[in-house]
Every structure is written in structure tokens, then in C-alpha cells.
Image (cartoon, rainbow, N blue to C red):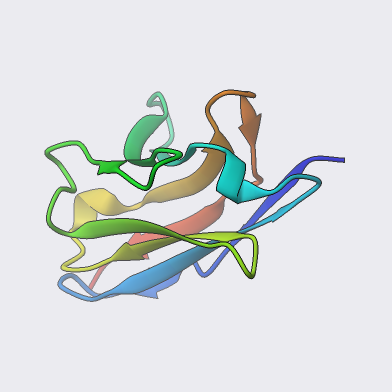
Length: 113
């Protein structure tokens, strides 16, 4: 069974950092493009990071320079390193397999003083 399990969310102050993890099972992440999205109540999910099969990553302007997506093939895990967090980064963060429309359960990130 293909599964994605996110973890690492929590409460951080503005300007702080947080690292999210997405543990994959049922497939090998090295063979797929992987992505992180986020969603707040009443809003559509927003792409925040994408890493292609060849390792190239893409980010929207809202997070570029602050977020970094990476893959640890040995652990079959995708990470999202978030730095200089802003209150508007508050959301539930999900990892997914774009080619398969597979989503994890999400992890809550709250940026607040």
C-alpha cells in the first residue's frame, strides 16, 4: 500500500525554522517527483515545493529562498526545511506524489508569537 506520513509540524515563532518529514512506504521516492503543498481553512491547497526526478527543485515566490525540499533515498523520506517563517505560512502541510495524486495526512504548522 502506497502511503505518505508527514511529521515535524508544530508551533514556531515568526522568523523561526522548522523541518517537516514525509516518510514514504509502498514505493521508492527516488523514482518519482515529490511535492509539498499547504492548505488553510477555506482556501485551496497551494504548492510550496517540488523536486523533480533529476533533483531540480521549484518554489513559488511566497517561499523561495526560505523553503528547501530534499530527499533522503536511504530513509525513503522527503523533507521540507522551512526558515524565516512568517505568520502566513501557518497551514496544514502535505506531501504528495504528483504523478499519482497520492497525499499524506498532513502536519500542522503554526507560526505565531
